[in-house]
Length: 69
Image 1: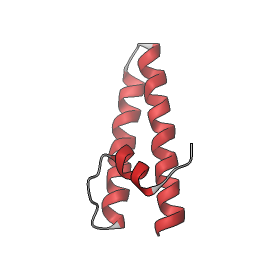
Image 2: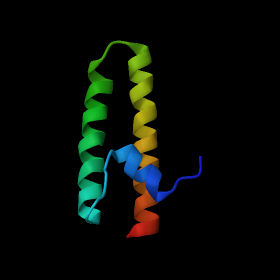
Image 3: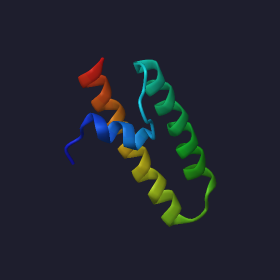
Image 4: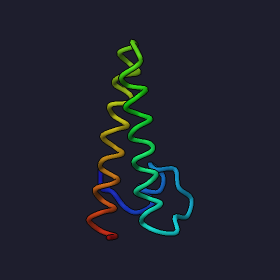
């Protein structure tokens, strides 16, 4: 998937970030939340879903760092 800035905002669920710190803070918040859900659930489908969300989250973060910092 070709990433763009709108994808980053969608994945991080940010409407209009004011600065890079907000994007980074949101990334860390979601990463921690998704990891916690993935680690505490016993349902394999849910674990896989959150693993996918973590990968997508990391992709969005890397795109943002490379292109907008």
